[in-house]
Image (cartoon, rainbow, N blue to C red):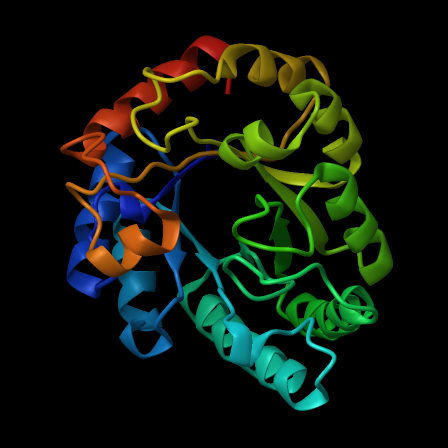
Length: 282
């Protein structure tokens, strides 16, 4: 099995089982063995059906679990933090039941632009809640991967160094880091140095162009980053993510500010990612 992953939103306006089945077939056709399934709306998730169609295509499901202000696991309001942990537990059960070996994304806090810097105690609240979640994930043999995102999507973890600090504060062996080049391009002084910082905990490296569209058009050069990881012996997942207003539902487009039609069909993105990974030995 290869280490390549692609986000289902490359093809889908938003998640549905019918669309997911098509996305799994397309992912497999382009040489990807993992498909990211967003658990944004848990009521739309049919884990048994996902397990069946992923198995039929030879694709492993991966999941993300976003939080909002009223389910912020990093909140210093104990009731809000408890709702965040409860929401993650629902998502974790769905991920387990579809056969996903990991759950990732911005697990550590609310998704979206914050009005202020984190207050005292938020980091500790997040670490405590995620340590409990990690213990429950470990009972099912699952990994948690924390995605480091830019300042407009979180106020808690924006750099590889901050991600490492949180992983080490959680202190569980089944918690790793997820770096995404779109976010790194905004926040890191040196993307290669950031890879070095994250490497001991790195479990997912995602390529995503500066405008989040076609991989071949933009300012980020992926080859040096992938070459560095190859030389360093990185053996985790590599993934592709992209968004286009021509594909995304308005709710999804609004969440990631995808206002332009940067591609018409996710197969364009999938094929560019496949060619890139081929060239770089992943």
